[in-house]
Length: 372
Image (tube, rainbow, N blue to C red):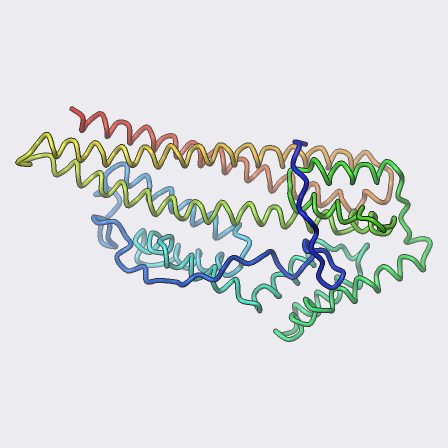
């Protein structure tokens, strides 16, 4: 585990920690503008990929990979559905680039996901994914009923139903000695360490909440039972959301810059001021290389973050398998799932960094060509 900073003050909502709330903090609402004219010149629905410059063709292919990744792994169901629709569009690459453009389908889908109804439904889904029937039968059952119900049921569960079901589960555990989970001093110290050193901010917050002043062994047991899994899910969601947002902007900018550089280079031939045209083309390719270099550096940071999480969860999975304590049994499946998820994110980060390195090299070649 890498050393992280302490998370900030824990916000409370009706006695429930912020990390267990009905959804991650929503971004400020954004006005969705028209995406018309957002596709770079020279790329149309009728233009086959082989007519594009090699650089633009590579950028478009990577954009398709990025949209495919969002269709499979983006935390918001609205974004996943919208991404699949863009991939299936009969307008081909033009539809994908319009989807990624500011004010396009990606932004519109994110705005729909910020709707309260969508957030309540997502909360029910997350509770089902992170609360096992063995440890939280009442919570799991209530969330399942709400998810199968309608908008009103999901809103009620997010507002009060979750906390009420939590109380019923805790009462049942306290009433049955067989259900009671022993919490050793070593377990508390382990949670304390997570509160400082875990690479995930939401896991750190959940661990700190479990050991807050006045907390009991039940709070620590609940951290192992569902708080850890909930914090980890929020951390993975935050990572995937941040990466998707950043890459959408980067790819839209890349295709625009490449189109401009390609056009500037083509204009050199036959230009009245050949030196001036060459200088303009060189500047255009330099803009591409600067953009690609910055994107590559950003992905190198994401590589490190994903690798730290994958290694962290590998170690947790091993600890859970080696421990004979019932307290750790609920963690085993969560640890394996998150190790696999973060290993996938690490591989995706490796591939993205490699793409941006290759695009940087292509742009550098463009600068050399136009420099003469």
